[in-house]
Length: 119
Image (cartoon, rainbow, N blue to C red; front, side, top):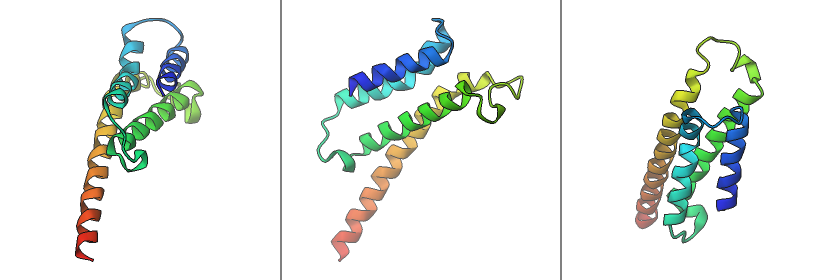
């Protein structure tokens, strides 16, 4: 799985113009965050793990954003003079989205466990 994270980081680097600057490192930060979370977690029942859901959600949002910006889908990158601000705020949104998915997954598991105990 670490190869997937490395490949994702490399593709992000290429999609952002292959120039090493702080903005590229800032945009790779969510991938580094989920790589650390993945390596620190012992997955028992992978699909039931809230950490797995967080990793999946963060990764999918990351791929979606950079695909839209790279291919300029819907003029996302060229349609506005402030489109580059997406690269500044995206990592924050990505990690918040992952955290929200983690909390939602935990809440669903808790509610499900309570429903099963009642039955």
